[in-house]
Amino acid sequence: MNPQFDAVQKLGKSSFDGARTAFGGASTGTQAIVVETADYAKKSLEQGAATFEKLAGVKSLDKAIEIQTEYVQSAYKGFVVHATKTRELYTKLAQDSLAPFSALRSAAEAAIVPGKSAARAK
View 1 (cartoon, rainbow, N blue to C red):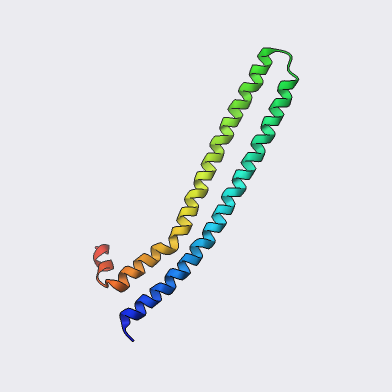
View 2: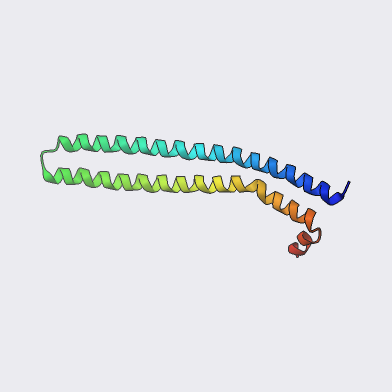
């Protein structure tokens, strides 16, 4: 057969395999993000409930302000930790999802325009 046709056919199969791999990685990455977000929401709710219980038993304004200040500081720190972890998970999700297509792009360039990859490497 025609060598270019064979190359395009192989690229089509590689594209399908890359898409399947990317979707599998995206599913795993998305699941990790959902678990992290659910854990953060649970901790945040528990922390808010505990703070409310403390505030319900307070008899002075100074103590109430102290408890509220501690809660706000703790909630902010927790949010920053959660946001950092979520950012890392989204970054990993993007990298894992695009990795199969990066190799495929290089292979496609080499197959379709044989001298292009070599010229780009210079």
